[in-house]
Length: 139
Image 1 (cartoon, rainbow, N blue to C red):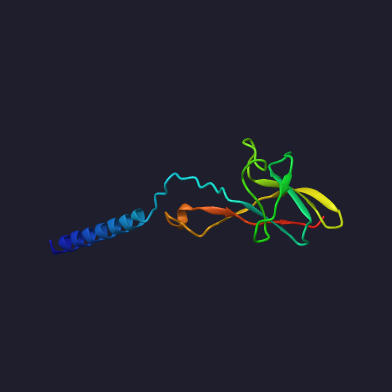
Image 2 (cartoon, rainbow, N blue to C red):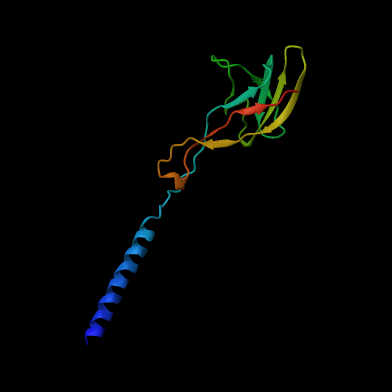
């Protein structure tokens, strides 16, 4: 009878421990909301040699439009007309740059993104992102 009592206490304790482990592991899962983050900011173009003029547009087969330097001297391409058409995606950018001697070239470059580091629902849920500056190789 004593052995049976010890066995029942041991089984009861084991059941409580297993239930606690299952609860803790199951309770630590994060339910991420169904949110898609869209970045609508500018795409910055970076050049190893400063160009005299720049034209750009988003997507393959687009027609580059002139880009003006920002007040702080950066080449920023906004996600708006004439650079972005409704059918275009923002995964690549066509860049046409001319240097001060009149030499230029056109190329299509991939746009990469990175996390902003802000995770409103925790790092496991991802979070807002921004575009990395696009390095434009010399012509």
